[in-house]
Image 1 (cartoon, rainbow, N blue to C red):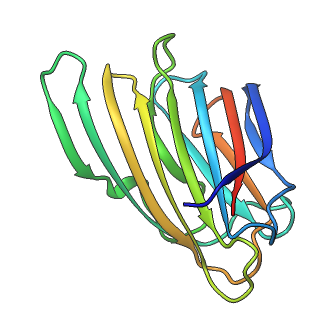
Image 2 (cartoon, rainbow, N blue to C red):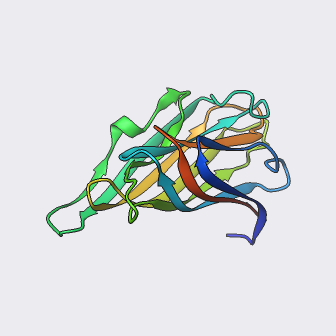
Length: 178
């Protein structure tokens, strides 16, 4: 991994979405988004993202993805490693889930990292992967692993983050990796 350079910091405060419409260009081949203390207003919500090829006018780039989770109950009563077919897409244009079941209690939130590769390429599709840790709505620690690609050879120039329902608080930092 190269050296990360901080490009921007966005702070959500009861926000419906955070849209980053500048700074994603050909300067870096890899962009890393770091999420800190993302807390939804609505209990049991999913944290999602989608990209744009028209400077943020539309967030609907075709994606194919996979979603795995590892969970462990707070009371040690159950644990699980599973593929979640309901959280992935096969050539879909919806917002892609990065973390699901996030709780809105004072001790419930999420943190994670998303990597996006070569968004300015006009030759290749754009790959991404993420790792998130959440404390979810049923007193369970959940690690979510998502990977996929945007099936488009236009340059991606904007990215949007939101919850499946309601607003959210938290910090999103965008880094370029050289």
